[in-house]
Length: 318
Image 1 (tube, one colour):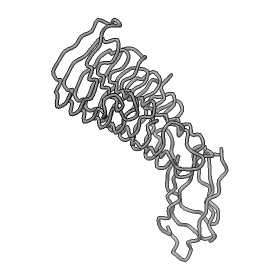
Image 2 (cartoon, rainbow, N blue to C red):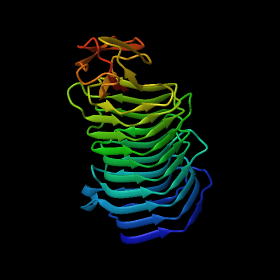
Image 3 (tube, rainbow, N blue to C red):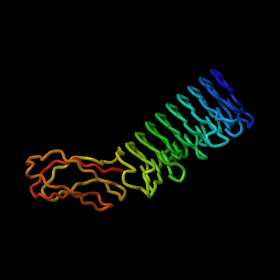
Image 4 (cartoon, rainbow, N blue to C red):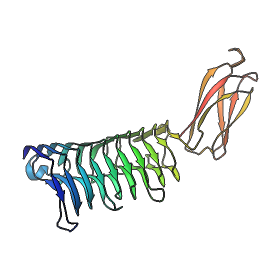
């Protein structure tokens, strides 16, 4: 099946095990599924499947756009590869996917490669984005996720970018973003807003390589903002926290200056940037270094010049 458009249909199931939505199965290329309304389905609202071994090539060149999928119990959208890469080069964009239940999955990708998930809205379900069985390059960008029961984004697809998403979870149960190098590597997680979650982010890094990067994300109000395992320097940086003051400007008071902060954790790094010599001159500027003790709410700036009154910008990086 090639060069096919499935559009502007209304499908209303009866919430029984026999009710299904739109299915594209076999060797499918250049398929457009757009502007459909599917509701009350017990399985997938939209499923695209493929098999390289069964059909000689992958299902590819598929666009799933601007559909409204409501209460599709198993999942809103499923991409299913019978073998690795069986479904490839798919764009999922502008869809509104919702469920009144906290079970099932908004979008699941299974043995896929090169999937772009952009500008969708997913409300409800247990999880919103769930790559499984070695799916690779699942880029998740500029989506809105609201009220998932378990997890908004599983960052388990290797060679992926997860950026610009807004997550508003359920404070008692949702993990905003989860990742584990056992399931996916070479992943960049950046510029996401994570709010109202039990756990904002849970990441298992690598002890030997920087294989998952978590940077420039913003945490608002979560029970616990993050949990890192096997965290390495440069794996995380530039993340900000609305409920914590993790940066500021300080004027040195000679050889030793105390800076008050939130509690400094063992995985935190402290960055210090020189601004100017303050009321002194460059002759009074010394070499500054940082003294810290984990689990205290302060750190020290030590200068080699007892007359140093320089201004510095400091930041705790998490």
